[in-house]
Length: 358
Image: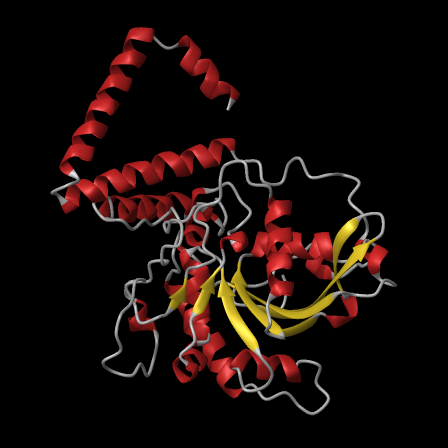
């Protein structure tokens, strides 16, 4: 960032102004043309998307500014709980971003990067992207399908602590709702993994922007705006046994989404701590007994770190959930006489249903 500012300071002022006016001219042309040209609309959308996602990359600080003297969640261990909820985290499958940047920087990295850039260039005149709000890749779709198959046949043995969670996941016992972050890979994973339930019940997946990944990279920047449906075009090709004739909705797919709680993209100044508190508050306010949440590894890890008691040494504080991992726990809330509203994860309630941590 310092080098960038120094380069701008040393640059020729005339050149900078000429470049700025050129970009403004191109932008104005696209704005005027967008009224009649789908291509111009797409280019305008993509230009704004790239500009905002890069600005977020450079300026975001979601993990900074958190109070260092936050109270220990165990402060409410012996207080009367005002609300208790079962929560199940479901991490998304591998994404196109993961494929390029999370497999090491050895000899194959330049090849993966070039393939990614070519794929991004091919999408230039569309409203989709390879890097921004990165979708599932082939491996990610395979992982989501494997989770779907597991859920369809998973019948825990008597006495298994995941028995109630398995029934809640399939919607065969108790009351539960399915929610997801507003990023494509999380919604797609959730939709595929729970398709048998969604098709049977006709319920919709709630899109919850507070679950948006806690990272500055452009893959954590959403395509869908406020109360817009997350685009899931082509997901039907990855749902085996899909009934014919199903109507496609605003997501461009057969997956039904409830976007009432999608507040749009996270602002540059968003605090990750606030997003977790928002999710905890929203979760405990729901009537359903269990909240099934599709989301992301960093966000989930920070949630465990923040709401597990400080004395807890559970591995969820340091390790990420595996792709398509499913972990359940009990979230508690109480109003402390000194600290106010506090949330606590019962460390003895954490149950790995599928996958676990790595």
